[in-house]
Image (cartoon, rainbow, N blue to C red; front, side, top):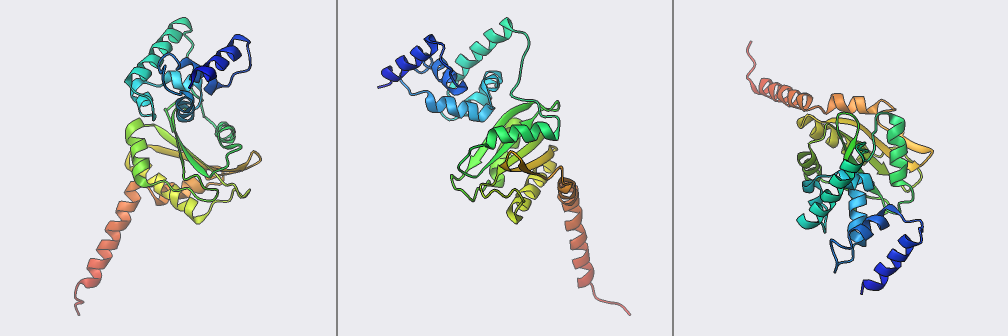
Length: 251
């Protein structure tokens, strides 16, 4: 069933046709998965790691966390990665996001043209390099929900130094909703508990209409209100006040 499609792809490569990243990766996986349609797996890998460079920089554990990628495929990719490393010593990552403009441009590339509302979590190393991307969607135009359990899994799996969050509004209005504020607060609390820096949450409506919690100063307010220490202190203070109110008054 796949032979005709694979032959057409080979012809495109032979004729130096303009191939997209996922098509190159799809063809690369032909030999690793001779009886399976590799198109969906190629898309999943690009979505998870952001680019071809990101796929070939991922380690075996990260690769096998992508649906459809088992140990043999992960090792196949890792072997090719090692070959490239020895041929070309200069190693280029997915992206390095050091400034707000870097993040804004990266968000635009990731969110431009989407037809469903989505939330993406970018796990960063301490030099700003994106080490992993997690994308969440409910395949709806006006709603997406991500549970605390899923975010906890992201943090526990990747152990990032910092996190950036990107989100899109298909309404054309990038202003955050109360749900956006709540999600950002939850992200901050989870990051604080795990000693991870939450740098920003950007909401993309168009290339020229992007809201940033960092640029508006709102991320600083949320950090102050929803640090793990602050929440614990508030709860202790509330409990102390309740105990004092319950104590009998003395004349």
